[in-house]
Image 1 (cartoon, rainbow, N blue to C red):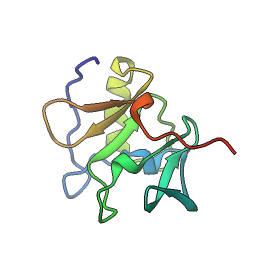
Image 2 (tube, rainbow, N blue to C red; image 1 turned 90 degrees about the vertical axis):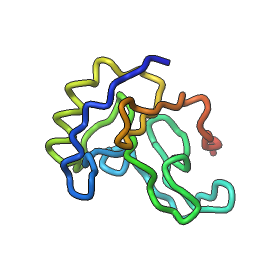
Image 3 (tube, helix red, strand yellow; image 1 turned 30 degrees about the vertical axis):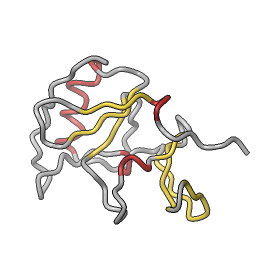
Image 4 (tube, rainbow, N blue to C red; image 1 turned 30 degrees about the horizontal axis):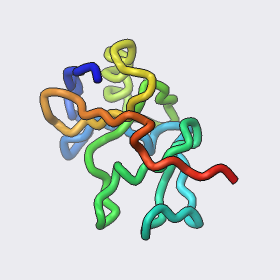
Length: 117
């Protein structure tokens, strides 16, 4: 996996970048969808669970996005910084920004896939 420097300024209050899957048009949350023992959000574009984003208390761990992020309501600065590095991102990776020197990445194939109905 390509190593990508974390360029985000974390200026969106409480050290956040203001850009995560929740702010993407493909983010969905289904109360009836159970993955493991917890009800979860998912990506409707790539058809995988976003369980990786949350801990056991259902709190989001960092901020998550992929190259195909389409803005619904992301913070302006986070979106601007995303567009600065978008061309460097791999197509099949979910990235995590968590204030470290480099972004963490997980291949889509390693994420829990949703079953086709």
